[in-house]
Image (tube, rainbow over all chains, first blue to last red):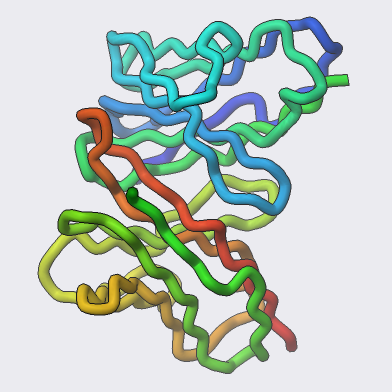
Length: 115
Length: 115
């Protein structure tokens, strides 16, 4: 149980394009989903927290207009990297949980490479 | 401020040897503590969690962790390591910040297993 699916797993695109990453909870309803960024050989950095039906809460230093988050249903959240540039290349991981202080269950991540 | 410290960046053990990964946290209230494991290019898998009760917590894959409030520690142990345990291990504390819950991760410990 508690499976989180993230798609795509790997994407390469040209600088200036927008990229959408999907995060789905397959066998549970996720009231809250999280988006993280991970640089090589480093820990996870929380970018934003999204609750179903409301605006995402972004961490300090994360550009909300750059990283658009939508959590339209209890099983789907999307992260759109707008006008992506090479410095946005990274490993993006989502997680989902059923309620406060419940464990977060992670997707397998998306490796984004911007040329 | 809340924080998680994993003092060991890299650990190498021989297959069959015992393992202990250290984790110290700083948090003003009763912490919710987690250990996650990450294989290369993948998301995170929950190994075990501590919310309350018995301070010795059993997890998956033969791992256990002990919560010691007096030492602010939550060390991960395994009596006999298998080659498949080679991965990155993250300790995390669940915090309440800005009115919502989120995880703060340690920097991670990379485990290598020698045959």
